[in-house]
Image (tube, rainbow, N blue to C red; front, side, top):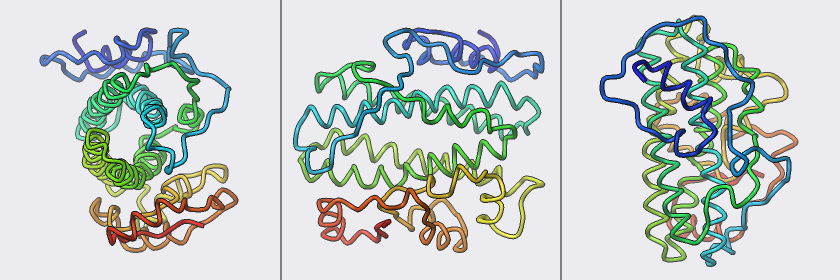
Length: 286
């Protein structure tokens, strides 16, 4: 395994979980190869294969239970593994992206491996292993739409990772409410890294020929009608997290106001109570 392409192919074509988490060698280098055949989906062993069985994440007030906290981490870990694979796919797919962009994608991929490992280790401490519950492919369903590095930035960084800013803040405070400092500290680490990841996505958009007058117009121009900006925020929206990223006020305001047919989830009472108690500036998405 000498090149970044070798490393990414190893992640996508290896079935075993431990092979997807392997660290790259320090001597790894980037080398362009436009002949790589990309898979429609990543190789996965039976235990960690995608499932069409729908599962629900526990309600916030039920996170006093260790089992429910483990289930929540299983849900988060599923997202992280898909992110690992999607960053690998992007690096293989966008060989002509600027060197700085490819370097940033590679850094984010390694961060996602760490995030998954943090979730996995804590989950196991709480009595659950990855693959004990069905795993959806919600992120991978967007892969066919990602035909440019700008679309990757819009869908994965600004949307999926942007929404995770909100969820990381929310769950950190919920875990603290239930005196689980270990889980809360993991969410704090996730938040800090996601700020960097969204910044990297924003850099891609702002340095693209596709950039228009502002962040919002550029971002929305890269989405199709079935993938809306609603995917870029949680049901508790924290505008200051987007300011920390560096998104402009037009984006922050428009995302806060945005709603569609999927925007009807009501904020849970525990969330409103805890966040108001901590004086966290948030908008509850109705």
